[in-house]
Length: 219
Image (cartoon, rainbow, N blue to C red; front, top):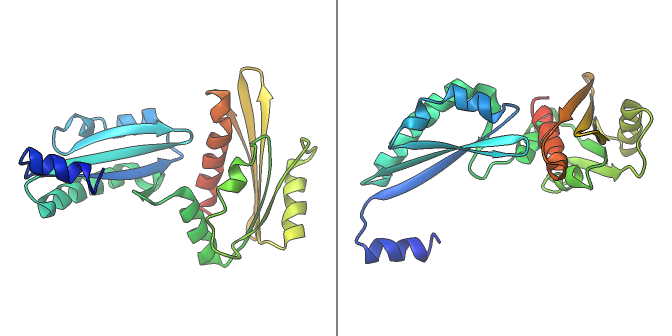
């Protein structure tokens, strides 16, 4: 698309203007809340602002059109600054940045390694850690059975891997909803979170993984 289709269309139709997009990634804040905070910006004609919701995260897409790349960059930068001021910590990155890279950076700053255990996610959380730098991810385990004590299970696996940080994520069907439990243990303390999920059951693992990563990036 970038190397063949777009250059062909520009040449064929003698298009001289430049169109550029910038995508800001958010987590920990619902689409409806974001929509309310930047509703006035979504009515702009150039640059334009649009939302794209995913399981546990929302993208804010800024698209600008101008006669030069310099002008397009300026337009996007001004609008991005405005959006960042409104959404604050909910924005974790832009374009190719991921939640995993944010967690890896947080661990690197502390000099910590992470071990993770999960149940009911089908390996979704553990797959997200494969991008970590060598040594940052101490190991992962998928529980065959629901643990009786989630925090204790997380702590036992953390110790077995010799990691400073332990995280456990556990999914349990609860009628029409799914109950999600997250246990996080660091040298500074421990916390347990319980979150109900009422969306499509098939999206629950991704939602749980994103919510867990969002919590970890703030350690």
